[in-house]
Length: 480
Image 1 (cartoon, helix red, strand yellow):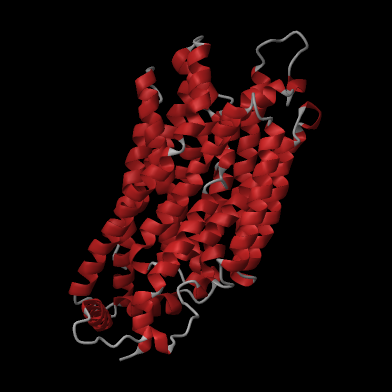
Image 2 (cartoon, one colour):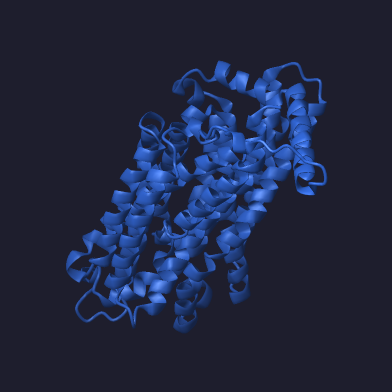
């Protein structure tokens, strides 16, 4: 009996679980900048962007508008430059990109610590550094999903959920600010991230994406266990190994993955062929519209709250302060997104294994169809969220925020899963980066939208969200 399957069955799951857990912990604070709304009152007290106000002005909308403009800059620059990070990942490797990102993240977080009225420009630079490095962390960690091929959607969703929930960090910083200064909190966060991130880069990640699904450990004599008479544990182990071999033989008979991989290698021989393809067009169209809906919900939050609650400043401040806390729901929603992705993929995989399709291209498109339900669910969520923005009700706003968390979870999980399936793994970083870059450029529309009133701007975004239905409809019906 071959020793490799024995080792894979007995040892690999434990190692992968530990590594996956450390990646989830690592993502738990990387995206804290999404909860920036909770820090606006504190930075106002420090005089950040106070130069936008007149000397005798008590309520200064221009000052708050600068914070939202800064967030738009963070997201757009992050999305535009992330293509370079993806290129580095494909050319230099995961480990190098991770260590570079750790240093950039450390500097960005320190800049947040030392931002004050006299250095307001640091708020822009700090956000750019943390946003770019945080997203680089995420695309590195997505490669761990290769270690769990049957549950790739679930793993990517959990990692993205941990990243999404890190907005809770800013909520904690805001709530403890009276007792612990903003500077102290960010310095501690920067140092902890530097130590932990360096360890993760050196010991948890391998150099190349293609190596993440493999394990370099060679089996030794201790990996073999011969069942003795009366040894129930070894007999049970032997039974599991036998079932494992049966599953391997069954998978080889169907050879679905082999045929799809063969098609990928034949079809996408260069980066140019990847971006001149229907799958790239579909995921890019879907992602850029969904990203605009996602980002605009955050940038228009203050304007939307004024539209909903008028002069009720107490309610507005309360909702702003807990917005970051509600973002923690992302980690609770992410398993649901993962189950949706994996269940739909499993359904179409069963159809592929039972079908007599001889054309590899048709088989490839059927595999992509497994992501279409998640695309469709996000489209419905985005349209519903946009519609609720016209309803003046506190309960409705809470429902809208829950839908926003669902949208956020599906947005990044589904797009990453699609790129992982649709293109060769060695081109994942560059292709995924370009999708994000195009989405970031499209998000520049926010600069014009935030100057409009709440109703017309929401109406335009609602109309644009209808475009989200194009990609899933084509995926459901396209065969070649």
